[in-house]
Image 1 (spheres, rainbow, N blue to C red):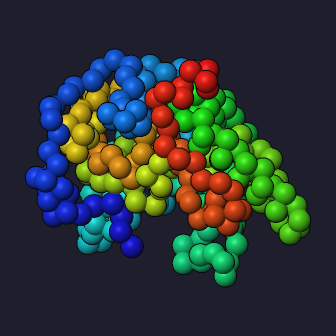
Image 2: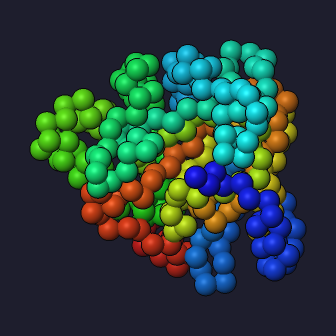
Length: 290
């Protein structure tokens, strides 16, 4: 399975379609193409560090520590390989985990199988975590309502449909988690003290946004987006929303402890619930969303 790293293909694309300029961003920006399609939002300072993301993350310290893999490094294992993590200087736990109240387990696709609560959420007091992450989840939902209203309504319809389906199938555990999962996104990745080589996120639809938020105590670090010719300052409290499928992006190691929460969704859940897929976010439609 492709994990988003293919240097030869990316080099070929870069030669054929080089960016027109190199741009450095350090203030709030909306980037769109000439057709009015929004590529990404960049909102430094959007996250109030008092919304308890650190406390909620600390509840997942055991699965974070267990997530780090060792052995021969490979492109298909880079997200959890030990070579991409660096030690904590404080109370953070390096690692990368994914949480979801309803998704398809690896190797168990539709239509033969149905969604399940992610193992990490079930095994490590995910109920308490789901309650603890309410404030950041609601903040992200509210910002998505403005940044990509089509995706917001499509995802909300999917979550409601999942709840009704779980009740109909008497999947009480899933129904309970869906009731306390305050996000319109179906999945959350928590990433602590990891460098991210240049990559894409191929399992998301190009038209959709992933939302990245970051907190911690670390020095100056930049996120690189070479296929756009853009580099952004990525301080604590930053929010970046865009298509990880379209944007090739990467981060170096930070001088200090850095944790990111990445909200995302997989198309197979939307397909399973037969809810309409959202198209691109268009700049000209934003006033109607406000």
